[in-house]
Length: 290
View 1: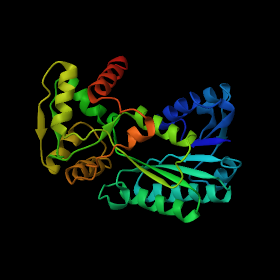
View 2: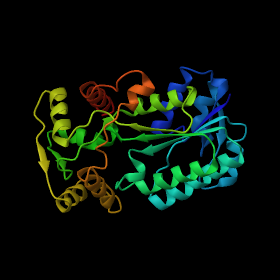
View 3: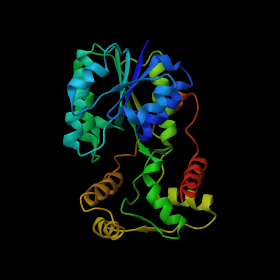
View 4: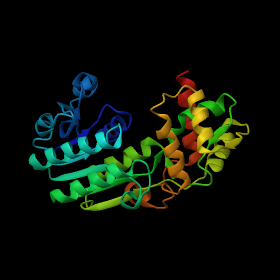
């Protein structure tokens, strides 16, 4: 049985690989990466490193050859680019006769009004069309996505948001990684859809939990989308990023991440890392990298 993870040198992919290596021998694991040199540390540990680029389908067919269980980690970029790249990966998996595909999607994908949902809808449909058994790991929101706001709060800034009362199921990337690894090595996950959400919180509730960790109040500043864009621009975010971060706030406000589920517990046999503990980890990581 050979398992392969794409994007294995990325922030999520590297955590998934480490989680897998706790349960399967390195000889049963392969990774597909654009730049094999970045995965030299994995090669030294006995993991097979293959070159695969979502923009070059011919590399993917070779990368996926002889693979039983494949994890396609969704790529970065705009929706159009990602949709094309994911289609390349799915088609290559079909040609390589992969036996099982897991894919990192977004919560409530097919019904979602989230900014990023269209790519995931298209990719899920493409995977189903192949007839290959699958598992869709519909991830909610990574707590690490809030690092900028956490850093600001640590420096004494308010928690700025235009997300209103919208709720989010934040969880650490490590929890999502452990869930992905469990699905890849476990049995009975064929043709499944998992809605992976942590306990639902508003921005105020998250800021309050962060205040508990920091030992000080973190005031929340609710603003309009226009004001949020202005503030983000003032913080130095590039112009092309501004509509994306504003769109995320709007998606949260509109309830696209307000998805309650116990699928994490089903897969992991444990709860996700409690929010205070997760925030403590995040704060410690930020402090160590200063």
